[in-house]
Image (cartoon, rainbow, N blue to C red; front, side, top):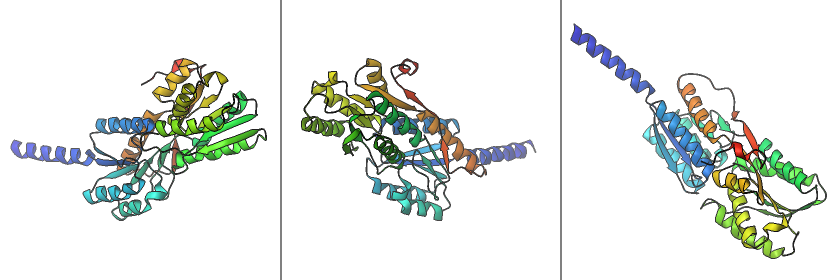
Amino acid sequence: MKRLFRLSFSLALFILCTAFAQTVAVVTPYLAQPGTQFMVEAFEAAAKAKGWTVNVIDTAGDVAAVISRIEDVVTQGVDAIVINVDPAQVAAGLASAADANIPVFGMDAGTDAMLVTNVTSNGYAMATETSSYVVDRIGGAGRVVMFVFDAYPPVQKRGVVADAIFGNYPDIEIVDRITPDVSDGGIADSRAKMEAVLAANPDAGSISAVWAAWDQPALGALQAIEDAGRGAEGIVIVGIDANPQALDAIRAGGNFEASVSQDFNGIGSTTADLVERYLGGETITQATVYVPTTLVTGANVGDFVSQ
């Protein structure tokens, strides 16, 4: 009788553990970006604490490959999928997940009917802060270089807002609106493209500011400006993400003056919590869940520690 009880207890324990031992796939083409790395690492840490198995798949800049990788993990029978890519560009993969009744979550992706929800920062608010910072610093007049990336919804939103704010000032001229190659992270190509802009505008004061939709192109622009010996011109540089290199640059007190700190750990852990709640039977009603952000300048950079 005791043996039967032990067997029954062991079986019940096994079933309970199995029920919570979820397998989740994270698919992204942007793992070369520091922000994505931090989010994924936070998601993995939260998932590990929950006893899940996480399979991280990086397509190294190949957005089209995300579709086939989603189809692969659908075939493998994962319990949930998390994407960090424009859902509109991978609709075929999302459809295959829907057909298999596998829920898909966005982690700094974009809002889409085929996603349970998308966890992100408010791109409109972040762009408002940084573009307004530039306007104030240059007194509402000057020539601005913009670095954008319209192929990725969270970043595309930032460019739209910055365009609108700069466009509200007739004495601000957009010198160039640059989309860098992000396959290597974005710094190298941004630097090369900024070098070309500086060469085409050689006079001191011909460039007033650089607005970047995220930190990597801002850092590339900073390198180009410093290497050209034009740091003393007072060219204002802003980014978004407040990654470690950006924080160091702001702390140094040079041209890179401001960024926005996204809570990447919060995005990753919140995504994991929402996956858990959904798989546990809860209905998720919010199409987009925003995690708070903070503008970082020389005044408060000391409150942030480089990772």
